[in-house]
Length: 83
Image (cartoon, rainbow, N blue to C red):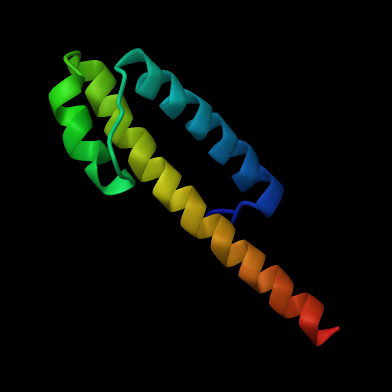
């Protein structure tokens, strides 16, 4: 069984993911009009396969850690409301 990360650890990982993602966004000038267009725009703009794969990995990691952070925050709020 694995240890569930705490909110500060999740926030630290999200910050790292965000910074790396921003580097790719700037490197390839990914100026999508909406977040929903970003993946399709990246597919056209990123010509280096390793960078594109990393972009997709970061997208997935960001989603996972974002959801985990939201769940931790919700649990913390519920605990605080009970006290």
